[in-house]
Length: 360
Length: 114
Image 1 (cartoon, rainbow over the protein chains, first blue to last red):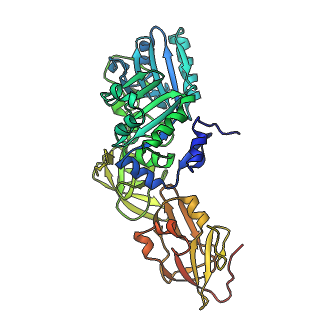
Image 2: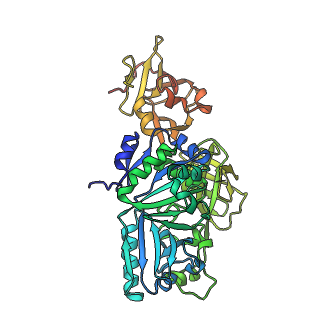
Image 3: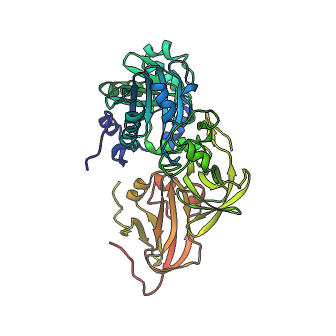
């Protein structure tokens, strides 16, 4: 099968990227050193091509009511234009079809950004639900848009340098809000635990913008560092920390699920009928080694599993997210099966790193 | 970087150097370190451990993956590179001087090379 490419494919190759097949997309893993790229984002500014992610625009009367039913988080939290909300989209069994960000534009339009690997399935599900509950709604897959993330403590300063015209409008942009600027949609969001922006723009403008950022000293960052940055920031990765068989309540996402209000949403009944017996926690390895996905976690309350494990470049030790029995407490020590050994790990609250500082 | 001509290579991307006294030194190739990326952890075999040929005996881990290292010959471990415990990144910087371990091959053993 031919790999899908983003409008920045040639730019990545010109910058010396090691390209990999990432869920059917030809994407940069790193441009030399994953560790240097990680540190670049924690201390300065880096840019990510996230054009493989899909923008979906929902337009029409009743779009808010439809989203109140479609999503586990409550879009009524979004009352001013540009506000963003993180939410899961659940199946009737309470499993996570995808996690996404929804932006309120106006009462006739919301914008949603979903994961690359799940996009086609998501859109099919949205259309299936809309056919029943909001048949007049238009659900548009915006494959004409690219997306570039600029992240790091110097992200704002270097973004203004690259695109001086953006400064006045975006300077006052609060975290988790977005603003439309001509053909660009600029959101103060990200997946690294640092300040930064995610910018959606027409495919044909992406290479020019990337080049302008590069000239302003923003270094390109591959998917490798994107993963260690998000893990340190304690952000879930779809397909690793949750999927369509996992309840958001067992994936550390209870804070995004609105079970208190009267509002009904897809998956709510299943969540209420099945209280969580496991929970997602952070692990910090006490012994030498590296925690990896799918390693078994042994506790006095039963076994669990690492859902995302890696070396943490910012902390210089190994960390993980793990799904373990709910009775295990923060501060407990558990054992992780690593090859033929049992290694000690401490159970901690995450995030591990926020705004460049270690928290564990 | 091309592979140095005085070394021998296994199919699993270890390099092997035969020393004057008949002992061997083992490391990983430039190709292997490039594939793995930034090294963050090395687990070496203990000195005195008897190894069979092809036995898993060491692990190198980069940020993204773990890779097993196999004994290129049957024999006994005589040394491991302690420097790599605190500075695994030396493998990335120069994989042909950042050796992992040394072995004294069994008398009848033959090297598993390509």
